[in-house]
Amino acid sequence: MSMVVVLLLLLPCALLCLFSCAAAQLTPDFYDKSCPTLIPTVRAVLQKAIAKEPRIAASLLRLHFHDCFVNGCDASLLLDDTPSFTGEKGAVPNNRSARGFRVVDRAKFAVEKSCPGVVSCADILAILARESVVLLDGPSWAVQLGRRDSTTANRSAANNEIPPPNSTLANLLSKFQAKGLNAQELVALSGSHTIGLSRCVSFRDRLYNFSGSGRPDSTLQPHFWEDLRAKCPRFHGNNVVAPLDAHTPLHFDNLYYHNLHASVGLLNSDQVLYSTSGPNSTRAIVTRYRDDQGAFFADFASAMVKMGNISPLTGTSGQIRKKCRRVN
Image (cartoon, rainbow, N blue to C red):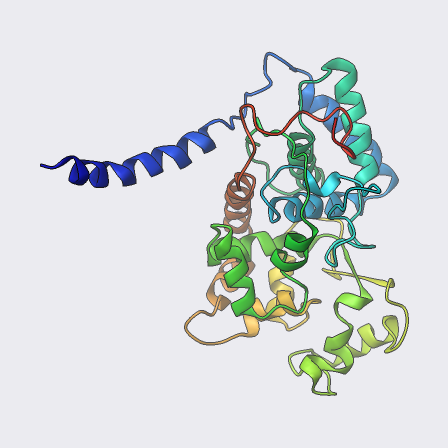
């Protein structure tokens, strides 16, 4: 057998090892010795924040998602703009809607007091996302830890790679698949919209000019359409908010999927998970989660772990930022 053939045969194994070894560097016990108080410290900060504003839990979960979808889970979203640096906070999906940065700051400050220079902002954000779900009665999962923080950000990628609220199902599937996430994981992770609020600007087109038609989205239930029009005027009120789940917006459950089944999903990117037909339809997955909250919880937890493993910086890559808003 020639050397070239041997190398070709070994290449897939080498690549598999490369990707699996990178993922293996993230472990739930990464800080057990270097910062054993990490989880309770972060949880205490979050409990105070949620007691003051329960909505913040959904905002922190969204921060983790928006961070991971741009160059991986590296806390790049947390970086502020400077005269010589353009961050991701001003990107369309984040501008005036990304929230929770002060909670991250407070959690980082508390962790730094007990474990200076040890824990990354990316890991703190991942922990805050898990604890936010748990504190609103959702599932738990073993957060994989050991990420390091980026020294750069990518506003262009934030504008292009985070799925917008008017996404079609095809667009959602494409953007999730680009991150290594399949259709089931798309539907499970979309279930995070069982908590939180969304701004009028994110769903106004469905009420007045859906897809440029000059008419409302025909999938909207008439009573739901009337309720939303009363909250969201046609020409103003961009920052007026409506609950993503009108029934239990502060409780993590599976009512989001009941809403989709009843055609009262708030965002187009929600409703298309059920209303789109064809060979790539995700309707059956929505129905499964509607009928079985345990299945949703299990799949959501698994998908969160997988999403948290998107291109992490590990080893000597990146840095452990002293403050999450700026590089060291």
